[in-house]
Amino acid sequence: MDKFLSISAGYLCFQLLSGYWITKITSVRTARLLAWIHALTAVLAGHWLTLECSPFVRMTVIIVFLFVAMKIVVCSDYYPGRSKLGPIQWGCFALAWPGMRPSLFEEIPFRPVTGGGRLAFQGFLAMIIGCGLLWLASTVSGTGSGSYWIKFILSLTGLSLMFHFGLLRIIAGCWRFAGLNVKQLFNKPFRAETLGEFWNSRWNIAFTEMTALSIYRPIRKMQDKPAGIVGAFLASGIFHEIAISLPVMKGFGLPLIYFAIQGVMVIIQERAIKNSKWFFKT
Image (cartoon, rainbow, N blue to C red; front, side, top):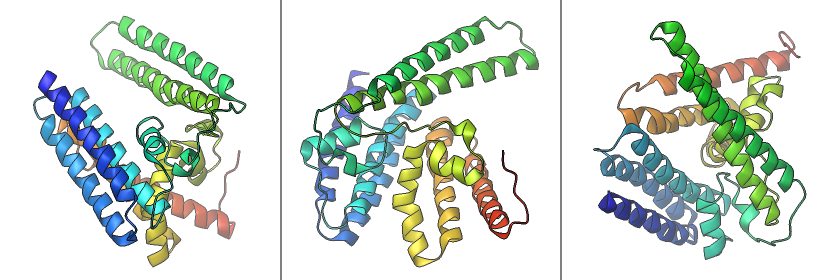
């Protein structure tokens, strides 16, 4: 275990150092190429390093390695020619914030902005409720399908509350105390009126920012908006294949199919709304 931790920490340090160097390359094409090569090698490194580990450890390591690698990709696209982040700002952006807008970290003023306390309180409350749901799941007895699904729903909801609406809001609150105008990354998803709004501005905004910068915009420049949308959703499917299917070596293809369907449905709904032939609005 000590050797595993040492190698993992060493590779993470390598990612930070090489990533900072890549984001300072003045040739846009070279920086983007090296950034994507780095992302591929990060997945391979995470997979190879954790072959004998549990699925949870494999998932954690692969996600962390890929997460930092995609920060490099995003910076290379966001700052074509040369990143504006210094070493400290780059380290904070790469490791201490799940969002994908590097411009927020160009300066860290350490003068609190409003809303940090509210976000942190909401996060702690969500963590408590999530822990309660996990405890309820542990008390469900029985081996039938009904008991299984009750445990599954309670556990999944509890984990989502703890991470998506708990930990991430606490982190956002802390950065607002430090003076950064960061926003919550899961912004009242139940209020979304269309699929496009749900995926673009409500659910996992960090992932939306990442795919918009690294996938959607380049494809849209070469093709059109529908092609960009499909490309972004297919990329989302591939990322989820890496994060979910690869660690357990099962279920390959399912995340990709799911996100492909979502992308097609977003395009259909947008065209239907535009043509005023079909529109459900709450």
